[in-house]
Length: 217
Picture 1 (cartoon, rainbow, N blue to C red):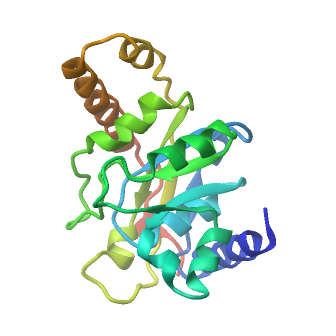
Picture 2 (picture 1 turned 90 degrees about the vertical axis):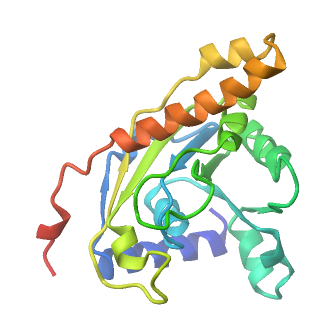
């Protein structure tokens, strides 16, 4: 980890432990080396830093491209390995994402595309399926619990409520990737959506295995 990334990682872990009283379950399921896609549900601005600081390896993040134009903030975002994304451009950030996976990096994606308005898991967008199919990386489902209540999109400031992050077993999309190399375009679009739906189902299937209401204050 570069110094800025390491310092941010350590500080975020400290805040997560003391403010949110977090629990991290089965982080050992993430490959420690080589390319990997982490696919998580999305309920809060806190999701990327929480997932990032839970993982004992460097992760790349997607961020709105306009943030990189802000002095200091832009330099900090680059130090955190963020990928600039313009949502008005089709296939936003795809090449940069694939390049980083090709180099053996890990990247965090949110299949729903945006934060949930009510904390419930939303339908997956086809875009993450395209990324999955175009890459060769294993895909690890991640589910965050309690983060919407702590800092959902309806709240301006976070609340000190407990949260849980649970990592699932890596998923292998070899069959769909192989089919995508020779299928017709209509089927290709179906494959992208099928990959997105598969990872979203895996995220939804994860359960916390702990009662977060019983966390000590």
